[in-house]
Length: 109
Image (tube, rainbow, N blue to C red; front, side):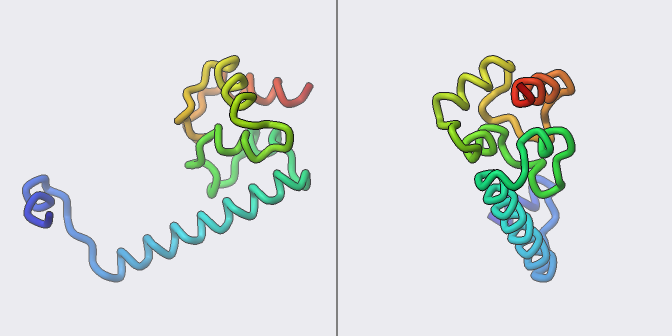
C-alpha cells in the first residue's frame, strides 16, 4: 500500500499527525453526538442548526440530522429530502442556499 501511495504522490503521515487527526475526529464525533442528543431532546431546534451549522456538524449528512428529530423517521426524512431536492448523501455544509432556505422554511411552519 505504501508503494501505491508513493506512486500516486500522496505523502505519508507521521505518527503524530495520525494521532492528531484521530484526536480531532474523536472530538468532532463527540460534539456531534452531544448536538444530536440536544436536538432529540428538544433543547435545540433544527432551524438553528440549519441556519448556522456548528463546525462539528457541517460534515454530517442532512438525512442523519433529520432522523434525530422527534417524529421524523426514515420515510419522512426521505420525503423531506425529495421535496427539497436534496440528495440522501448531501452534507449540511454542502447545501446550496436554495436547499438550506427550503429546509428552514419547511421546519418554521
